[in-house]
Image (cartoon, rainbow, N blue to C red):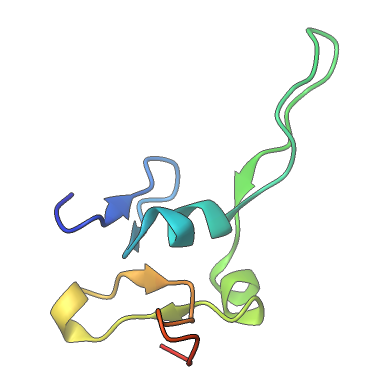
Length: 74
């Protein structure tokens, strides 16, 4: 996507930045052939609990980390 935004292939949600995308993923990758990975997308409630927010209409509802570059709430 343009302007540094991205879309998650797993859940279909859009994110304003790679940082926001990374923030919405949790769990561990498989370490060996015997261990199963636990990576998954956070639910909307879990993202909100982490402080993430959806951007306004200009970004088509893309999710943000909830923090602006100045360190203030986005």
